[in-house]
Length: 188
Ligand SMILES: [Zn+2]
Image 1 (cartoon, helix red, strand yellow):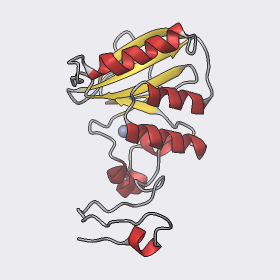
Image 2 (cartoon, helix red, strand yellow):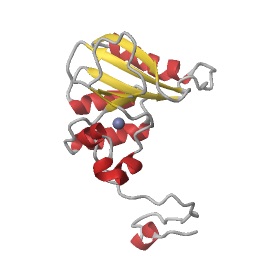
Image 3 (cartoon, rainbow, N blue to C red):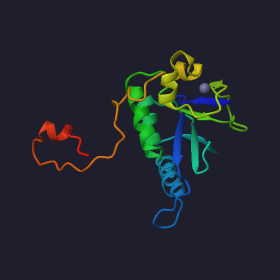
């Protein structure tokens, strides 16, 4: 099963990749960034935090933090806080773009298990046991996971354009007005 938690107006979902990675001081990254930044937000009255949940997602080094607030925030404000508190940058910018494009659930968390003792039930559940890979789901068309279709239903390149994944060599760009043929050049 997969359990879907959609970020509500009083919640921040923070995707903390490699939370225990040491920083230069040796302090775990999650400690140095996530905790320090949320502490500043609380002490300076920028966020009214009710509780913080830390959960481990499918992969070992991956943690998710859920911040339950005592206030409802505008979606762009919430997504900005998520990025500030250390959420994964790719996910963060995709969430922001989905919010700007008025997707109904721009930020969500999919867990392989229900979160133990959590203060609310998940918004949806589905029978999938594998990760909901956007490209794979998109290829499945009408056979894709019905929850994925309901709250995502997008092609992998819908937000930012289709990207090539092959290696390419450096193209030096001049200062000033950069010729578009150089911007567009693919050198292998
Ligand atoms: Zn599913």
